[in-house]
Every structure is written in C-alpha cells, then in structure tokens.
Image (cartoon, rainbow, N blue to C red; front, side, top):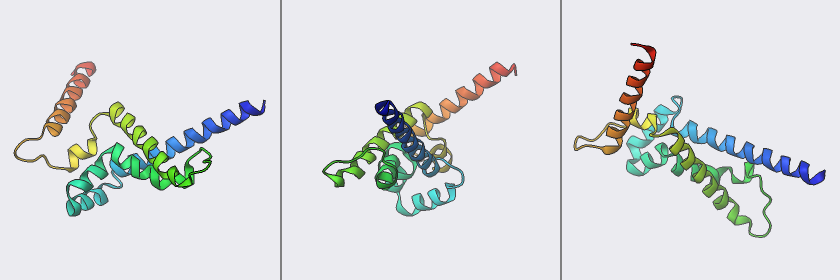
Length: 142
C-alpha cells in the first residue's frame, strides 16, 4: 500500500512540475501579457534573445534550471549540483514536445517581422495559417 501511495505522490509531483514549467514556457514565449517585454528585449539583444524568448525548448532549458530547486520532484542523492541541469534538460524536452504539438510559435510570426530577403520560417507559418483559415471557412460553409 505504501509503495502505491508513493508512486501516486511521485506522479503528482512530476505532473505539478510539468504544468508549472509549461506555464512559464508559455508565459515567456507566447503570452500576450509578456509581448511588450519580449519584443523590447528582442529588439535590444538581437538574435540570441529572439531564440531564447520565442523557442519553447531554449526557454524551457533555462526555466527548468531556474525552477530546479523549487519544483523538481525527484530526490537527489549525491551530486546536488546536477539538479538544475537535469531539470533544465527535462524542461527542454517538454518544450520540444510543446513545439511539435503546437507548431510554429504564433507570437514569433506576429511580433518579429520577416526579413526582406525571405524567411522560410515565416513563409511556412503563413501558409499554415492560411490553410487553417481556408479549412475553417470550408467547414463553416462559407
């Protein structure tokens, strides 16, 4: 009985960690509340900041490292300094899953102008949005 309760507790702590981490990833990379800050930082710091602020995997790594001592559900035996790295890598993987499931970051497509020489990322995202809109119109009957 004790092992089952422990397993449920571990699973609930892991779920708590994942939801908190995803919440922070979403807030930083996509939320409209953080858009002004995200665009200001990206304008000031350039390409590295854009990668960090709009990529769920990149942000996830650093968010995971920051949250390691607060929400990481697993007890660490021995090498405590590896906890932030372990949490960061797990959060990066969670961000990658989020990226794969969601597709192109809608905030990036809207907030960062496409360069004049062409940008495949923006082109793919625009085509994806256009096809989604045409499918919605087709399903709505209009």
